[in-house]
Amino acid sequence: MNILDKIILEKKKEVAARKSQITEEQLRAMPLFGRVCPSFADSLKSHPFGIISEFKRQSPSKGLINGTAKPFDTAKGYENAGAAAISCLTDEQFFGGTLADLEQVRSAVEIPVLRKEFIVDEFQILEAKAYGADIILLIAAALTVEECHRFARYAKSLGLNTLLEVHDKDELLSYQNEDMDVVGVNNRNLKTFKTDYRQSLELLPFFPEGTVKISESGLHDEEQLKELKAAGFNGFLIGENFMKTDDPSKAIQDFMNGLV
Ligand SMILES: O=P(O)(O)OC[C@@H](O)[C@@H](O)c1c[nH]c2ccccc12
Image 1 (cartoon, rainbow, N blue to C red):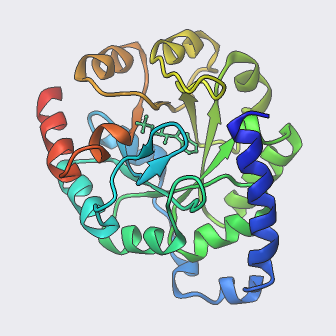
Image 2: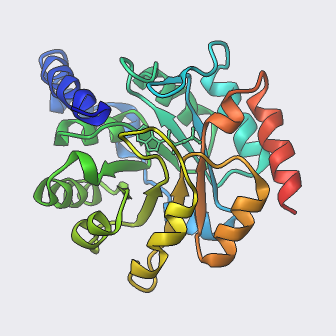
């Protein structure tokens, strides 16, 4: 069993427990539920490098990354530096995130916010909307094609943007459909945890024309981004490279300065 299988198993238990604490009606009644979500794809295209910067305290592969940064200040710093979107982990058990973090991030910024979560049930998509997210993540490796397409359709019906995450060509070809607003290649191999940005380049020829695409994980130097951008990627999801520093807001600002 790889780490993703383990997380998904735990996640299903967690969602079942959560459903006994709060009802769908209560989620729909929350103040942020009626927000109109800005377009993720448009935001990527209107920012020169389409950086999606992530608030990430810890991960199964790296352990503790940052134990002191605050979601509100970090998100604000990211936005001020010119990020196109913010990703906020809400998984607590493996990544140390919470829905309260998502609320904080939402209250700090205007740019689109991604609920970075292992979605296994429609209920979590309702939660994402209720807590102020604009985008949900659908991980191909964690879902059947039918689930993935059903969840994307449901997210679209609530006005949310969808980000499909793939690791390889087979996932890309079988999971992508018209309900996916953006497709991301995760450069992290889930079995070895190794990241290699060339994974993104390898999948490039298999994207249908016009797909808005991003590269995710293990990105840490400006040259990688310039190469991926020139090859056709519209955005870049970066967490650890900023979060591992004492001051993620300064780290992203320095990084941005290196891109111009
Ligand atoms: O911290 P990194 O290597 O820059 O990676 C960020 C992001 O891509 C990574 O956190 C991620 C990509 N897909 C995920 C799915 C679940 C949890 C986390 C992730």
